[in-house]
Image (cartoon, rainbow, N blue to C red; front, side, top):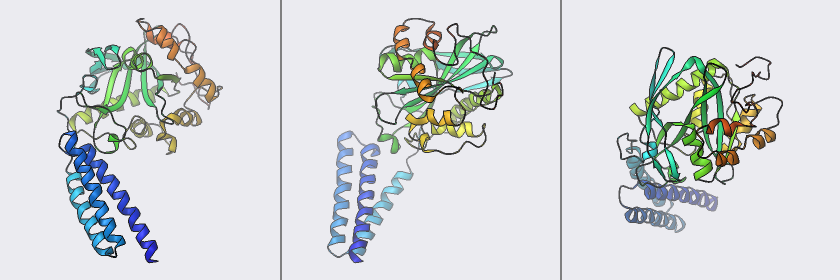
Length: 351
């Protein structure tokens, strides 16, 4: 029994030592060298408590690590997200806006012309959209080769009054990095970044990933009613407004590109269950498909194959008709940019 207790306590000590070391490595307020020293010192301290445990001083080890963790957590809980830092150009502005009658005004829509994956001609525009012409919702999934991990974007399409959808605004939930701050997936667990909702021109947001970063991008037409589309769009803008007032930390699991959108859409669409695929974002299209959110009459594999827009995006690199060209051949879209009238699985029209 004593051996089992020591093994259990050793496991707890190892977990706490690892967590504390990573927290210090990513958030200790010093230059990189001193962050590494602080992280190493914490590991060594954990080794001391572990040594005490196996030398028979179980109570001393527990009290020592408990006091150390209390001090560390007091520092950790005092770390608060900020809104006024020297942000990287591509996340400088959030997707704030307001509804004026039947029009949606977005204060800052990113319209960068990217010429490298990390460099672009910077441009932010104030844009207005007619909510009565909000016609479509598309899900973009961008993969860079990490199994089960992708980035998810939502693109709202507006028609021109003649049935052709020719104006798109894309929303992306991202980490809000400071200028010259590198991205770290591990850092996303340790309050390294604030949370950002970005509104962008589709040619900016999608072409960056498919053409400049070399990612594989897949487009899925989403079946959502007119009212639900509108409510989701306005909810994203209101969430961005709230982040501007009260910033939040990004979290790789609990506050990311899929979980935040799920939290918003669950307020609009009832009975959407929790699912592990909300965390393994690479499997998110399967979740949407299983709950009737993608085109009926097509298997998920067919939708994925026909929705791969990577080659079309490369071919349309300098074309201002980029959005129409990447949709050619995607189920739910015609070559002219018209979207067919669709029905959900219950037979109800969604347009």
